Image (cartoon, rainbow, N blue to C red; front, top):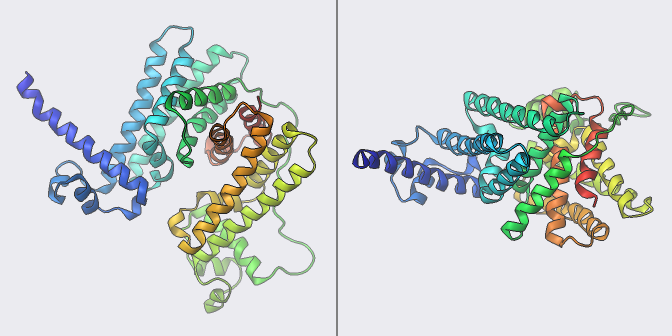
Length: 393
């Protein structure tokens, strides 16, 4: 039996090793920047040897992401099999540990999943939704007063807390990191959702006195098209046609799609910075300022598409000369939140505060892009409530 098992075990081990090497390269360079020969060379094998385990690069990415999903499913099953008391606590601990220990896979799931074949995307979506359904049922045993859609919302937000480790590189000691994520997840699961009249999102200005410049028309058209169809699916000619501009005159304003994307990201960042200054200037204390910051961020996400387009942009699509400046602007914005949070909660270290801020921001970013959630009538109010639940002491 042992002799018969060994070849299969070696085969599985080699497949996992190759997948691990590929995951590291995908994370470092992006999926598009890695070829089969790169993976083979880094793993110390030949290209033909790699093809004995995987049909192509997409198959490797699918294997990596599905293995992470299997861990999520196992953790959920184990939590269900545990004792009635503390089973959600056990699940949160398992998920937090997996997020910290397999951070690269969490990042790939978040940023590179769009490169999967459609059938693999559907499989991951179906199984992820099933896991969230199980979490929802578990939460309802603890909070039976919740409506099922509200419990589902809280579970999606909890998944965003764990997924937030993929959007930054800040770290603390493993035990503390896990405990912090568990605490943030519990804050979300116990959050009180607002029940008042929905606050209408601020609609983007589409008319007014005078005529908008050609540049403004192109920016507006590009923002809407990138948001609806994705950056790569949109051509400069389509953007020009949507703005009522045709031919070479488009390029008098923006030399490329990448330049348009960069301008959109810069505009979103600039508006966030102005809103942050206003929130800080008009608040009586740190707690109020954090709430106002959350409100301004949610307004930016739900009031127009600029911030959503900027957040979803692949950095590889932005010219290198602009990339570093945009990253600096984003870091300065997050630093404002971190400084304010540390003043409000002096017990947090700078790194712990940064992890907390990213968790709050990721909840808003994710839920506005989650189809099952985005149509909720009170979503803007709920996002503010969830963000402040994470941030407040």
